Amino acid sequence: MLLTLAWGSLFFPGLFALCTWGLRRARPAWSDSDCVMISTRLVSSVQAVLATGSGIVIIRSCSDVITDRGLGETLGTSLLAASSWQN
Image (cartoon, rainbow, N blue to C red):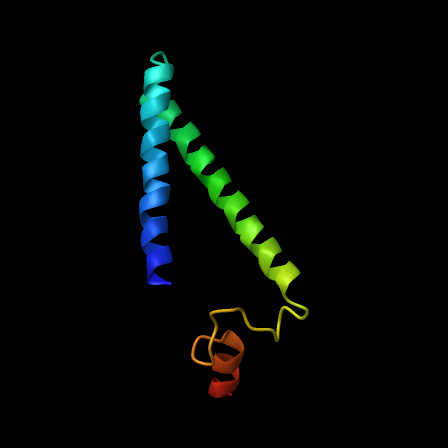
């Protein structure tokens, strides 16, 4: 889980920096705010596509999304177990 967080912390800012740099080189007439705005929207779109894809994978792999557990999920990481433990 921490490795995924680390890769995401590097991937999305890196994608933003790469897009901003590429747009400044490809479109020198555009202002910095235009390049940043387009880069932000592109990174948000990539993040939305990846989140949608992971949601589709989860829904297709579970027979019951609420009670099924994923491959790496244990009783300690289960949201269902955590909510029943607090009640």
